[in-house]
Image (cartoon, rainbow, N blue to C red):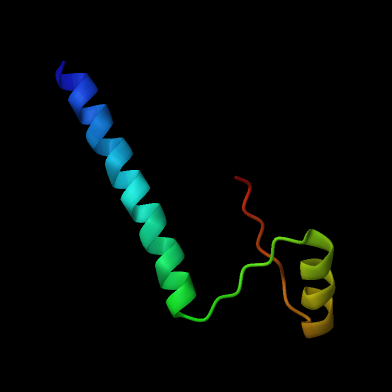
Length: 55
């Protein structure tokens, strides 16, 4: 039972940290693009790398 409680607490902590990261990125003005080809073109135009997140 103790392991199950610990696992549940860890899952909640991870979920809360992920939502905080999304909000922090939005507050910093980060714009996420869902279209890979558009993001690749924009990165090439601005001479910047891309960051991929698989969900």
